[in-house]
Image (cartoon, rainbow, N blue to C red; front, side):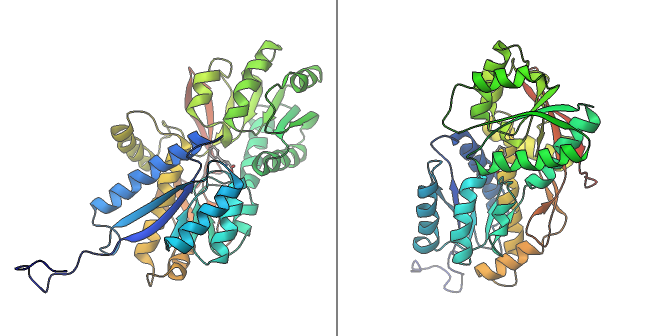
Length: 370
Ligand code: PHE
């Protein structure tokens, strides 16, 4: 309704774009979800400050799946059928992104996962994208780093058998390391509910590997690092993947993990201009350094808004097509191009834990970051 006296030809307040974000905002992987949400919020504020997308503000509907698969299915369905979102952001972990991706693809709503690296996720179908690298590349780069850069040949592997990310990345690494001339002298797996790892650790130690590849989440890596140290294996003997990137790991096992390397999406001191601009904006707002999750959350939202702006229409299908056409998008986590399999072609960062900080060591699979 127009207020009396107002110019009748003035346009009505623009209808906001409805975007859904489903995240683990409580439960086992809470830290992942919260940090991702912070990145998305920053991106939303920035785009709305600039007048929104095509003159319409962006409104994000957040849903907490409690780090739980069944809840994921329910929450994504709600966002799609009740809230009628035009696009989805989420999830953090590969396991739940697979569930959300099936719903999104079935309802033809484009979804961008910020951090699910398991290859299976985008294979669901044409509506599922990611802004992070995949575990084929991550496993390959981890193996090259261990065998070629560090020169380690006798390798152990420790992973969670009931997690698609962990077991998948272990497989990718194992295959790549063997091809490069590495020998897997011991391999142990646990299930996600276990908390005492000493039996596995002792068996690994007794096989005398030079190094242990541990593609697991921070919440398992903390007790493992502590129990390994007690068993005489320093944290620097472990090499990990992006699942280590959480402040909790530094706080609770930073000392034990001193010197350890892992493959990652980002580090606060990564020397790319866009990463530095993001770091500044994030620190101003949240008063601490961002994690990979925050930077990827930010990139997933920014890339989506960019695609919405380029899309030939306002429909989920048109937005999907624009996401698929993304080339050389300047993100906080590097330059991102979406490839024909809806994966992100981009660099990987090797990060070292130094003085309880995640420190940039090198960029690999380098896309000539500018
Ligand atoms: N890559 C992990 C997965 O697919 C999630 C993750 C991303 C964890 C980034 C930490 C940092 O499950």
